[in-house]
Length: 180
Picture 1 (cartoon, rainbow, N blue to C red):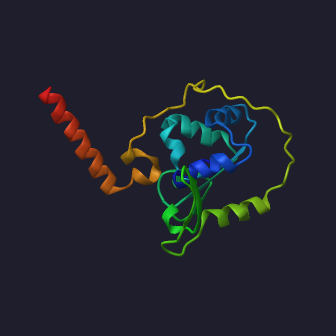
Picture 2: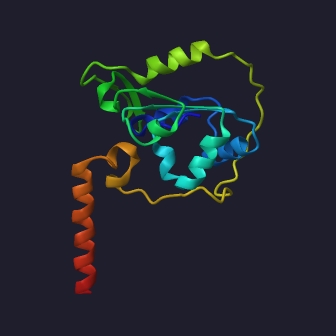
Picture 3: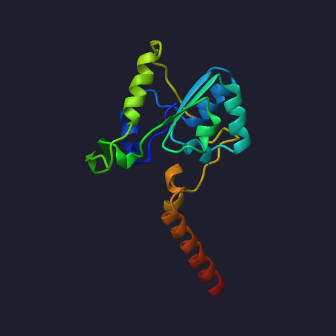
């Protein structure tokens, strides 16, 4: 399962074939149709309660997480692979204004290199094209969060600057509601 990186979610959605809705993937895990899971990043924990996430991980044979952090999902998975942060990688992102080239901040392992190595080891099974319809919000354990700038993604939740911005904005809201 691939979860889009925040910086290139638009590009991934436009360019990946066989992109599936997260709750549908979770249902397949529950039905034992998926035994192995590769996660890129830790955004899934924002959409699944902790107890349900533990249940999902326990039902899988193998879980691999590719993350720049050594806590969180890295501690719960069978294999944790360290990676760079998005601003540390060279590549292209695609947004509303077209494609933009990114320049690496520091030299480190890149997610695309890690994924290429994983894919080269996988047994290739041809996929038949099936029509795939999505029923949104029909998974009871899926948490559809309201997203604020300071709470967007597993990276921003670890940022002191964004957490300070969150606290400042919450304080402003509290003061303005008291004045009303």
